Image (tube, rainbow, N blue to C red; front, side, top):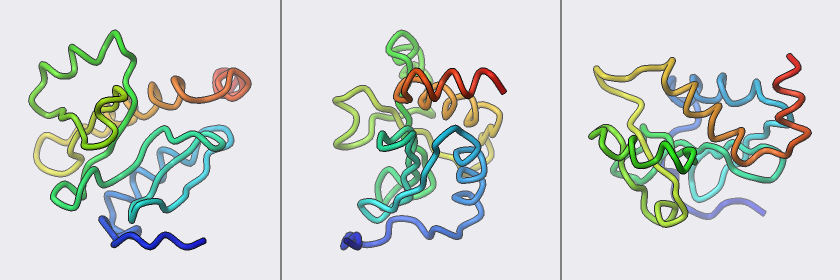
Length: 127
């Protein structure tokens, strides 16, 4: 069934491509368009998506380690995304002068590890 939501972010945009290049290296990673945005999944569980809202299309939403979440919230670059925020997810913009792709990759990695199956994390660690 096709996603009937309006497109939040263009799937071919260079920032989306860069996120995709990071996400698709993970075991059992899959990209699924949902709610008008690219979501990246460990099997069936989302670990990252691009486009928090139409006002923030160039952002990623990740699930941080609960112990790190409060520290991230002290950093003004992080925000609580609508719908996902109450479940502990955070967003960060991936465009602009303060974009740190090493940090984004680390956030994506931590998010993957929180939602992935033990088998998938073992496979990742054995590389």
